[in-house]
Length: 347
Image (cartoon, rainbow, N blue to C red; front, side, top):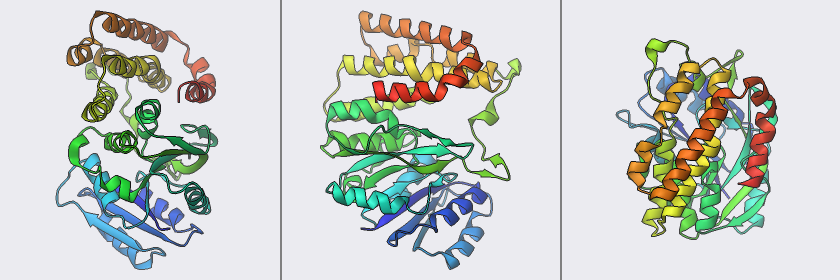
């Protein structure tokens, strides 16, 4: 079985080179590396050419002639693969340890080659804390209920695994521009009957640090300058739109399902980011998020009816109160166990 490690690349070449060096330490022999560059403005081409001359594994590379954005570049990296499975990584993520692909292949072979799945991960900032989107190792199943429970686990691209044949059947540009193409592709596979699997082992290290510094991230945009106040949405409307589109094109649209999507994100994701922004000094950003996720716009788009709309407003009010008033010290102490509890309760 061949594994293709697929990475969309844009600038930040120093982090990608660290990742590639770690990938090269894999003990599993049948690996290829697929990188697509989105017209980087740094010295990506020269430095990757040097890496390619000494790469232990086959190295497939392509550069977009112009900047096409994350979704297109990720899909091209996946399409470049020739392996049986594609293992996706961001360009500042890497594989957790030298033996993880060997263990993944053993699992896939034992379970008759399931179609799509994900692993857990750790952050370089806190490598001892496993961030859990999977609570077990095994094949979960397929269909709308499985897709509805697990779609949010596809939001972080590192550690997503696609069987190449299943992915090729759904890999179109329908979700480009959302920054969540991998969510839509994963849902399409599951909704079409593809089997979802989960691996509770952490097989990815995210947010690599060089000389103690992480790559640019959302924290770098936090500030306390009221003159720079603007509405923010954290990508939640785009994520909801991708999930809604995937279910609708499968003939599975229902107002109750869309309400469940909105409720879940106002109940969990929205207050989490309010507290994260506040923790790192981004009060202005937090208030920008309360303005950007004011429910009126989403409710106009989805037309859920009075009862469901009232429920969305209620969750927004409760989550805003919690996110703006809960002491951030309490949040930081409870963040990891609370996240893991939520994933067990509502995977």
